[in-house]
Length: 306
Ligand SMILES: [Zn+2]
Image 1 (cartoon, rainbow, N blue to C red):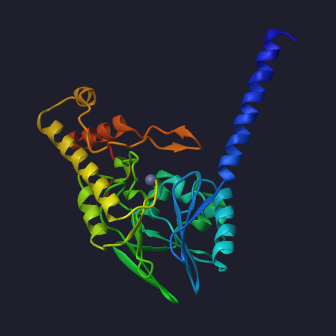
Image 2: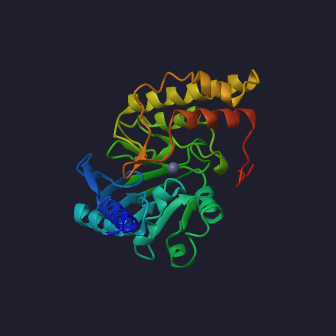
Image 3: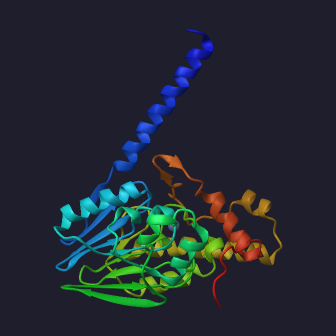
């Protein structure tokens, strides 16, 4: 075999091995039991919460691929012995919504009006054709409550932060709160300024979540924790907000802010990965976003309604 033939063969083998690795990762779902009726499913994408009620299961977020949606649905039925009554999307990002088309047409899909708008405007291509059947069809702006037999599920838009349309889910009887991506536990968060997200508004938004005083706190990414875990993250966001503001007041360049790298509340934080691959959510990224927002160096693609 010639050298180029060997090189080509090696390349094909590497690509094939990587493809198999990705498929295995995407099919992998791990389950954590939180209470008798509440489970978390983890896989490639955001955390999925599953609540069993005696009138069907409530599922929060659907991960990254339609195939995962199908696998999640089967897993939910096995865990709860119930069909899916309600699918809730915490926000529009693909790692929380692209599993939706794996659910049955006709499923009630809950999100905020802003999230529905972002899905249509910022992720248009994916939500064309059959996928559109699983777009949110039960939307609200501030707060909505569902009574499913023995369980009360309240969805609340607590304010801007990760985007301007995120919701949190309060599982009252199980004393648990799922925050979606308003909370990355010990990971650097994505800050989607283009979809109305805000470093400056984020800490006060978390006050509204903390006010519910839930014992169990479920982040969009990272491990399940408690009020203290969420307060630690709030302290990190507050430090970031102050740094952005100070840089803007002092006309400090982005280069200087990145070179000084003055954060301290991120001790122990790790960049997030998907299927083992870093996706650019690190200290530099959050500092840059804080600077961009505070100095007005950002162009909103889907500006918030005033
Ligand atoms: Zn997100």
